[in-house]
Image: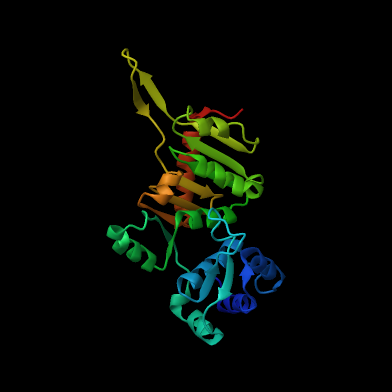
Length: 272
């Protein structure tokens, strides 16, 4: 369910006093009778929707972090209040049922048409934006499955360390011998790491894979999931064209959780 029209109007009144940081907006919403019981992710969705529709300006101030492009930004009204209220009253003011998530290759001339196409889609988030939004939704559990991780992922965990410390975090990996994976095994007790793979060693010293982990998913509780082609590595976010979706369909997410938890049960525990 999206926010009601009166709730949206109340949020617009808060935004009119901007520029405001994301935390300042959320704090003001908690004091507003019409908004105090609205889930945080619904408020963020409406802010993102206004931004994508050109109604809000996103400000990258001195404390802005690339890894937290939503929660570390400031927001300011970009269009006249009357125009925004007219927009909110229309049917197309509804937040999207799902977000398309895309990481784009570098801005080379030959890729300019591709970049313009992606940036022209309104219901589209970058991978960093999707992860930031997803982590804001998580209240109890975070499930992560990905075959490849690098220092980008470790930086992500550090940037969100306050949030991560309050969650039961389960990370499913492909190979345990990568330096970063070994480092993850020493994280606090609430962060657990398991290896889902089996390799057979041949006589000549080579290995063949029997099975392994190739899914790329992040699941917040049982409410929302990011599913896509992207590994949690810097190269996938800065060089590769990767596509995913951010979904909130609970029956589908519960099935994904069942698959994750069943794989987790037979995976090798790596946490110290």
